[in-house]
Image (cartoon, rainbow, N blue to C red; front, side, top):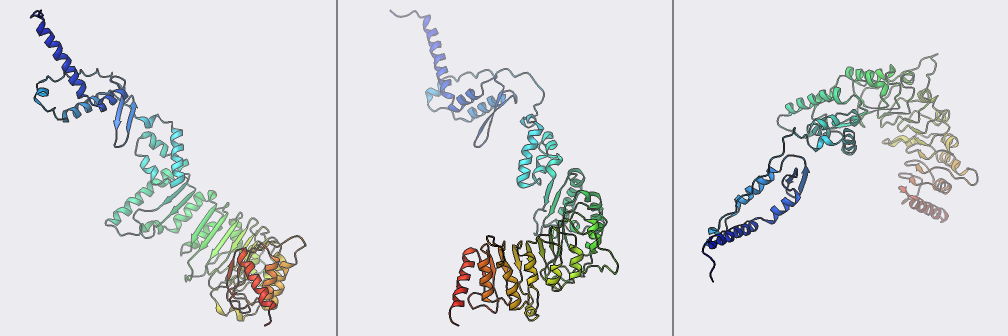
Amino acid sequence: MAPPPARRPRRRAIRRARSSLLVGSRDRSAEDWWWDRLAPSGSEYHLMQADSMLLVLPGLGPSRARAHRRASRRAQRPPPSGSVAAAKPRPRPRPEPAPAPEQGPDAGWGDRIPLEVLVEIFGLLVAADGPMPFLGRAARVCRRWHEAASQPALWHTVTLSPPLAGRAVKGNVKAEKKLLASLEWLMPNRFSQLQRLTLIHWKSQVHPVLKVESTAVVSFLEEAGSRMRKLWLTYSSQTTAILGALLSSCCPHLQVLEVSTSINHNNTPLQLPIEALQKGCPQLQVLRLLNLTWLPKPSGRGVALGPGFPSLEELCLASSTCNFVSNEVLGRLLHGSPNLRLLDLRGCTRITPAGLHDLPCPELEQLHLGLYGVSDRLTLVKEGSSLLTQKWYHTLRELDLSGQGFSEKDLEQALAAFSGTPSGSHPALCSLNLRATRVTPNTVSTVVSSCPSLLYLNLESCRCLPRGLKRAYRGVEEVQWCLEQLLTSHASPS
């Protein structure tokens, strides 16, 4: 029996509604399903999609942006093919969720990090790469990052290197002015607790930085000299004014002072009053005057000795040219330095073994007396090398006599001191430079046999040694091989 006619339209409407629901479910993609699962509507979670990641961020606004994103993607999809699909009614769009109540603007996750934690994170980056340019860029992110990047604790050590150093760039003058303006702002605002400043490649890029007047440097030393511990200077016409500030006790706690210039650099002699330097820098531990034509100021008759350098551990007066350092000058420098460990007098031709023997430095570990670049020094026969080894044979670790004109007998007596140590103990000597000396095979064999810790032995250009052995030996194996060759050649008939 057929159903009543009134019920047929109703059943047809139900079938149409069901088919529309199925079509709507088929239209939803798997991506839309995941978006709904990760950030349901009304959950106050926001989705941000990048190239290779998906971020779920809480509380950054309503989820309307996600709905609009889905709607725009659906609009881009092509309609289904076929007459049946085109005839079917499209599903009704779901009503949009009610917007969340309006709140104040969210500052973002950066402001939620405590300032102490942010400073600690910045400190790790600064320790690895330095404060510049990272802190300058981080300060422009937000107010919280600006506050963290401004902490003085992050600006203790600064290295400044101008961009495009050494390359010619259009608008170079404009770039220089911009860099100088940045420096003028950094000095009062970020360098209040600066402990170390390094400038790299500024000579060819920013000339005014290097062309600082000596008065500005002196003013800086007078202002910050009490905190200064180490100072390296390259000799120039303005060095005298800077050293004058040191003599006036503006840096009373200075521990390291180095004044140097390039090799073979012609300059006027540098006059440096020894006694005034001892009063101005009483805590000096390292003093280096390298490649300088140093003309010490005469002490004069009846002038008392200065206070000395009681904490001095290293004195380096090495030079590739002739200098005016004598036994008298060395005595004035070191008369109050019992803790001296390193004495570098390379190139100081006026120093004699007798003058070194009178120094009040009982525990010298490194003594460098080499003469380099002068071929006629061997013709000047000297005596007294035994005074050096007899004084310091028990503490010397490095000895450099390169180019010194001591005779064969004198060197034999000097190096024999290392074999006269008490039984059961060995000398501490580990480096011996006898380059271009008159040392004999017997003397070398004796010193090598007496010093088992010897790691470096230089016998280059030693005229009294057999051919094939005049070279430098590095390491225990090479030194022992040299000893075996010397003993073999000495035992074989000549």
